[in-house]
Image 1 (cartoon, one colour):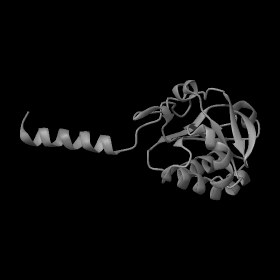
Image 2 (cartoon, one colour):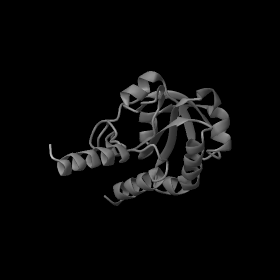
Image 3 (cartoon, helix red, strand yellow):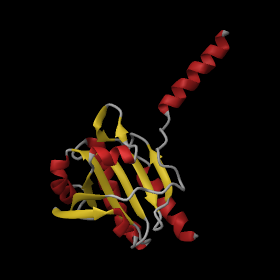
Length: 178
């Protein structure tokens, strides 16, 4: 391989590694139903996807762990946007496999009592293919928007929390315009 071709190949590999990974579930896929224990406003709560979908679209966002810097900032952004999601008929649910023993407090302090947080099992994070590479017992940062019929409308994976609220909001708005 000549030097320019080698340089182009290495550049492409670097750009691919730096860009967001694609979520496993694609738009049009059926989102697997699940039930998970969680907390809403510091109180125990059981989340069932199929039940939430009866009310409208669901913004299902997976995050690595409660009380980490990025996850706390992301929860604040979703809390600020939750009233607008609700006006559009959407339910927001955060799901994590990390620090699940702390989600009750996290739902009160950082989700600001606006949306529920659920505890993911290892099976759930595998089913949604959101296993965090560096800590396989935790979930990565992936956001889904799921239509009431259970079909995935949008899937977005990026370790950086910035953009998840905007992308999910845009997907819910696009769905509502149909």
